Image 1 (cartoon, rainbow, N blue to C red):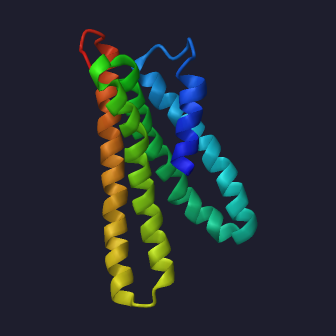
Image 2: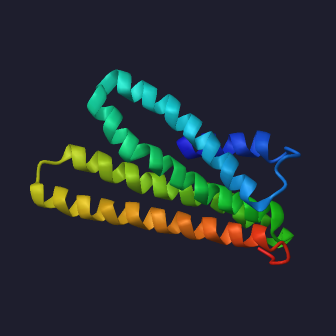
Length: 157
């Protein structure tokens, strides 16, 4: 639901904007929408959970929202400026990939909090670490690709 909410705002408002005229704009707008969402979500969680929750969310949740947004923005850019044949696919990927990334993150956190087996918790923490590292690398590759395209407008996406 969270990624869909961000995606729908980008489609309804940003997609039609005259200022959405550069490949990297989609990434910028997606991250801005995502950080606004994270701010509101964090305020609600911090009021419920206190300072510890604030620190944990600052380290994990806020960057997670940003990384998902980078991927969302990348595929929105491909949908907007890429070939007409790939528009529909990239629109769906702009939603589907962040939903999967966010779902893995949430699943691991929820599952870790529900079990009492230390071995499984350690395995999940290792898996969680790999998901976070993969997300960072994945998002950075997308940013580099978009920057390359913006620096050389003749390169088709």
